[in-house]
Image: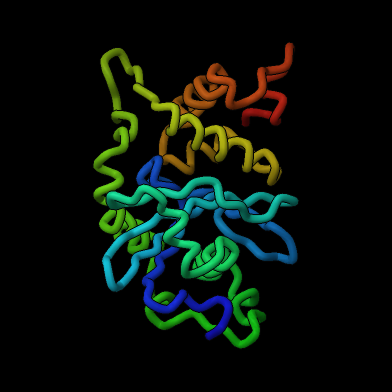
Length: 225
């Protein structure tokens, strides 16, 4: 078995985004080194074929910091979801199997020691991955707070801490990549620039982003353009 193959007895689906925002929008693509480009945050969804138990492993990617596991969730009644996952494959394996499904460069796939994506994986569009992810994680998503409502009374939005954490992460990653961070937030969530600016401000008030420098339009993470 090739190191990038899914562990035997499991199905594995990688999808851009995290369950917190129900895989809405598209995370920015980041280069973690050697032109290896992946979404800034992505999820590997592992389903044990025998039992049907499903586990979501959430990863974050950033230049200079590589790819790191940040959360593990059980879509079923699992007390120790990570323990179940590592019985079959290490966190390192799950991470790279997911990344190789999503890597934004076929050359990186071609350089992976003769490993090839399956025809099924190659045929999956991002939209199809997200739809399948929501189906697999339906029991988990049903227990989580819903995404912010489209519009509340007076134009106010009810932002959850989890959602603001994602906003901050998208903003910070965009700044690290030299991209206009507030515009990236707007594009990621498919919202207006003014709404994105409000969300960024809310994240900053929660201490998830640095404070705006006096006389500056941006934050100490960079300009808000």
